[in-house]
Each structure stands twice: as C-alpha cells, then as structure tokens.
Amino acid sequence: MDATRALLDSLMGKDRNSAPDAKDRQSFKDPDVCKHYLVGDCPHEMWVNQEGKASPNSPVGACKKQHSEAMRVRLRDDKDYVTYRWRYLEDLRAILQKLVDENNKKAQKVKEKLNEGVTCTADTHKAVEGKLSAKETLAQEIIEAAEKMAEEGKVDASKQKLEEADKLAHQKFRLTRLKEVADGWMDECCDVCGSQISWRAVEELEARSKGRDHPHVPGAWHQGWKRCREALRKVTEEAQQAKEACRGLDVGVALDGDEAQNGGRGKDRDRGREKAKANRKSGSSSGARKRKDRSRRSERRKRSSESSRRHKRKRSPSRKGKKRRRSRSR
Figure 1: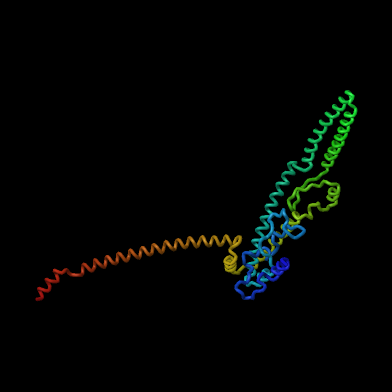
Figure 2: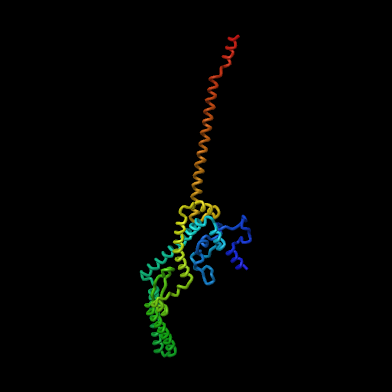
C-alpha cells in the first residue's frame, strides 16, 4: 500500500486529488522537492545497493526530499522554465564537482602511498617474514627438546615434539609460498572510484593480462562514482547550453520568485543574504537621514519662532507710549 502511494505521489504529485487552481497545490519550487532530480540524476541515488536503497558506504547517503515526475512536468510547463533549469543545473554541477574533487584528492593520496612502496605486497612480505622468524625459532626449540627427551629415554614424548616440529615446517612452507605469490601481486589505484586495488588471485592476474575488469568494478562504490563522473560531464554541457539560452532574459526576476517560495538554496540563498544585508544597511542609513531631517526641521522651527517673537517685541509699543499718545490726542 505504501509503495503504491509513493509511486502515485511520484507520478501525479501529492496533491493529485486537488483542483488545478487550488491554493495548496504543490509547486516544484517547494523546499521539500529535490531540485537535482528535476533536471537530472540526484547524487543520492548514484550509490545504491541491489535493492535500490542507498548503499551503506555512500558518500552522501539517502535523499530526504521528494523525487516527483509530476514536479518535472510542472517545471517544464512553467513560463520561466529556462531560467529555473539553468539555476538548478548549476547547483547540481557544483555538488557533483565537489564530490569528484574530493575523490580525486583521496585517489592522489593512494597513488602517493603506492609510489612510496606502501603496497599490499610489501605489507604481506613484512608480515610473512615476521611469522617465519617466529616459527623458525619455535621449531628449533622443539627439536632441541625432542632430542633431549630421546636421550633421557622419553621416546613417546620425543615423538610428539617431532610431530609438532613437522607441523611448524609445513606452516613455514605455506608462508614461504605466500611470500612468493605476493611477489606477483599488482597494486594500483582505480581512476574511477579512487580505491586501492590489488590483483592477487591467478584468475585476477589472468583477467588483467586479457584486459578484463577488476572484481570490484560491479560493486556499488565503483558504479556510484562512475555515474557521478558521467553525470558531471553531462550536466556541465547542459548547464552551459542553458546559460546560453538565458542570454537576454530577465533571470533575476524568476530567481527572486524562487527564493521567496523556496527559502533560497546554494547561490540563491547567498544572494538573498546579500540582499537582506544591503536592505538592513540602506534601512539604517535612511533612518539616520530621517532623524537628521527631523532635528533640522525642529531647529528651523525654533529659530523662526524666536525671530518672530523678537520681531513682535520690536514692533509692539509699550503701555507708557500708548498712554502718552492718548493724552496728546486729547
């Protein structure tokens, strides 16, 4: 039941039962919609196991967002499809490029180790030589003990010790053989997944001589990096073509609308932060200008009121002067 519902959500959208003009209709700009899936392959789906789930050794894990074919259709039907597609392709290209760059750095370290002689062959030689030395010492001690027991007449005990010495001799032979086989091992770095691989078994060495793949190639790790590198080449070309198609278009308007609905992502998010910072600065500066203007107006009003009062005092006659003029008139 859950699988059927998930399939319907992917093909028709979670709002498949809503009217086309409904307010709650889902948009491809929603933050829970995977933008990488809209324009290509989601990196989270590149490293998967046989069940189609994210592989335990995946460098990115499982995708937590919705992969919907219905959202792909709505993106293609949008009037600003060209600009949205270009932005989403650029975001996908940046993520794939980062993954490939990190893997290339790890591969370079593996190659440096191999050039310094740190190989499976060298490690095997070191381990085998240590075990051979220990077994030779132990075998010598057992033989000496067996000879001493034989001199003392302990024949049965001496035979048991000699049997132990024979077992050690067989183990020494196997270790010596392993050391000889290790000389034929070949260590190298895989250019696709960056792993250190060794050609050890006879079948592997024969396959290498005939140009066949190493046994690690069908694994999820190698196949994931193969898909990642192929997707990077494809997305880089498509992003360049989309950029050419966007020349002369008002890209900023469409992307600003996407930021308002999607909350920003990647470069859109950075651009939104820069805009907010600029708005805060302009708001603070405009507020300061308004305060200065108010203070200037108040100062002008004060000066004008003081000057008007002084002017009235100069023009208005005193009471004594009024009385004198009245008496003269009489």
